[in-house]
Image (cartoon, helix red, strand yellow):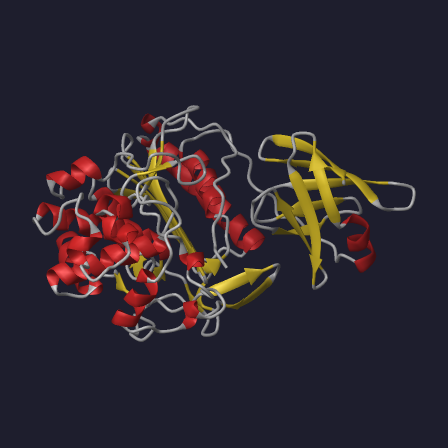
Length: 461
């Protein structure tokens, strides 16, 4: 199971930092943001923390939901969260610090650090290619049986490295761009070898102590972390404990925890000239040769959303895993930061980010509606399940599973549909409405899909 959430912007966004300079505007934004958070708690079951900061100062900070449902502990400003792939931004920072200290060069190949590697492709992979997802190393799915077995095995350090190095490269290093968490595992292993210290110790020494991050560290499935939120999985309207996942194959790519306050400090540190010159030079420029996903390029540990269509430029990274939905965004020109941390999966954090951005920037924004749903009867599912096609070639597949209806559009992950009326269904995590047309026998023949400012008509195949 790979958890990824598509970035689906709904609004054309403009930014005017002057609008944040008046107390009245800040107060208005705070009220609107709090209303939005309350609605998403009821609508999606959001549980977590949202922080918006400007020039290093918080202009909105709120928490909702439960850090522990079992113990009835609320999420608070002190709650820390697993942040999954946001870890990569910290690993990239460590790597550039190592370069500044002369421990490595970005052009160094893996042969220098792991001379035992026999595969010529692996031996030629460079540090730069690992940082920018151009190594050819597959993502987690490249590990046989990862989601059914290996993701829950607690590997010791050496067996974990052997597992990663046994992967078959998907492309010649440097020739393609493909997001790869195992590539960041390799980076963390290089750093451990160079310094003779654990990845967690390096995070503390090189980042946490200089920035005074007191609630950030490495997870290992054994150590008790004070105030760490328990993870949960939201399926339809039912909350369950998140499945177990070992951090042993996630080193450097998804095994950090942090608090909202610490993460804001980390983001604003890049404005305050706290880092070596090589980091300031290399961290926030595009290093991928083409888009990694959602049309955005990748730097080192960050996606780059360029300024376009009135939207401000942003550096961002999301994190999704069992019991984790997180996103951080930094706006370099405006000195604005947005943090979303949740212990619920899978939430549409990119959509939440887009909504919060609209509110903060004072743009026209329509609050999401809390919609009621009907129980779907099996006869209804049978009448509408099937495959449909639009005139542009897009395919829509509706399938049933345990009495629930799921929609899959193109290559996107499936999402659950809820029935609002006899012929109208909607998605909660993907804001799309489906309106059905039936023939005389009651079988669906056409679907009108509306959402994200677009409309598509689908005909049953």
